Image (cartoon, rainbow, N blue to C red):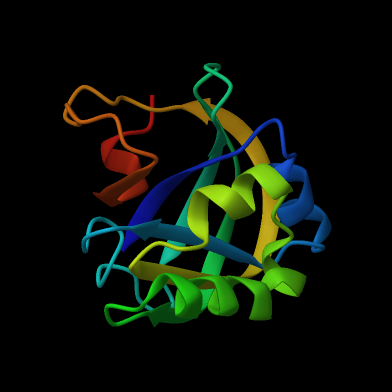
Length: 141
């Protein structure tokens, strides 16, 4: 399964993933929303900066996934803190994700920069930061 994942340009997440200093991405919400339960080991993630340019710049493989049960704010904060060495979140990102009731932690391996390409988002009305595309060729421009 292929996914398009928007990463924080200001926090230089894409650069960290390519350099290998960041090896995990996080998503969280008050309810179970995408990508909760939809990411599996072996899936391919295509990374795109949230800078409006709209170009995929790297890809990597999912090596591990953790979908939390409903957790308290304190448990959520502890979980994020425990994985901060892999997440490398800025203070702003930490405030965004820590404390959510449902946390998804996705460990990434084999991240490599690729020739940038655009994607067709017309089938994705709700502009979220995670697109489940099944096969990247379906959205590649």
